[in-house]
Length: 264
Ligand code: GCO
Image 1 (cartoon, rainbow, N blue to C red):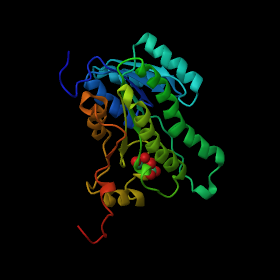
Image 2: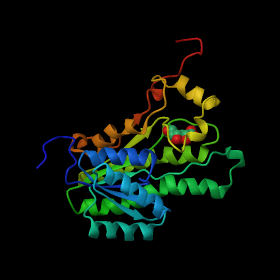
Image 3: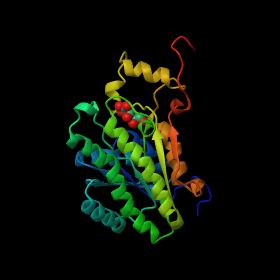
Image 4: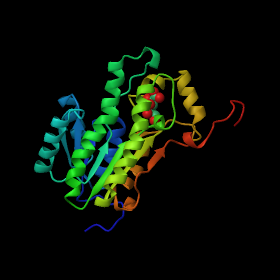
């Protein structure tokens, strides 16, 4: 029996969108802390299989399940399948997300709805099903992946901000309703990280790249590995009395109004 506060041996963790990027980095953190990983992919079997191979190459026990997190019938069937084949889910990281960068005035309603569906409705669908199982056992951990856009607006990401702002309040409501079942529900708000999602706005010389470097007190983009410790913390015994909190891993962006360009 493990005694370490941060030891996840014997735990089963489901990570949606865990085939790449921040989801994979957080999942690896949990895997190296001892958890068995169940990785959801949304579309490509090849991408999912490649990710599972990568986890296993790092000595992590991992299984892949391909399903659309926005479809409640499909989600419910796959959670039942996972819990029958692998075991009861102790930890859920709702990480799967999309972004569409378009000025609101030009955005199609269908595109707006697609972002809301994946980034806000899907975390509700998956968490509701997983929580039902946790309620019949001794509880569990739910982590919703938020964003800087949970707290701040930015040109062209209005739908994403609406979803991620809503996800903060959904997290607080899950915490409110489910804490009595020993389910701790919290969020992680990544700052600006070096991923495929941000690659287009991170190229050298891109005004946004310079802006983020100047706007971040740590004066750098985040590395996906920077998220692993917070994910382990919120997945472990160490956070058993933490509920409804969004932990921002952002290099300090949300702590400051910023500084004039002529200041050090
Ligand atoms: C953007 C970025 C952000 C980051 C992240 C910040 O276009 O502003 O993609 O949305 O990805 O969500 O926390």
